[in-house]
Length: 149
Image (cartoon, rainbow, N blue to C red; front, side, top):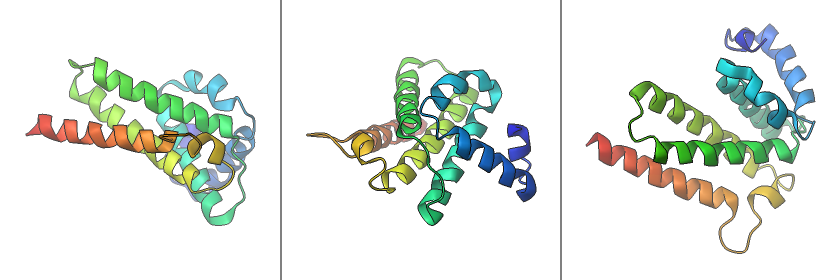
């Protein structure tokens, strides 16, 4: 099913989006199913991103906040792996960078859908999770540029 999403055929994308919109209403969908997706994990993130963008525009999709929390935790895991994989080859780095971009897009889309994700992304006494994500990603980008030079 997720391979059909990559075909960019709007007929397929429509029913796949509807299927995933229904699944993402379940608070543990991403937690339960993400690992089983294997090579299609980033495609799944692309679907989530598209649904959140549509939600921002049309307000039709109800993604449960726990699925966004999963994306926030996945972002933290990706950032940790960047710091711990100093010897990673370029393929892994490029794939991680693509995933970081997808996660950042998901979190930024979710951050502007208020008040649905306020408690998760904007709450906190010092640095809200979305602010921390942006700060850490900025540091990673600066680090990557300094290595390339």
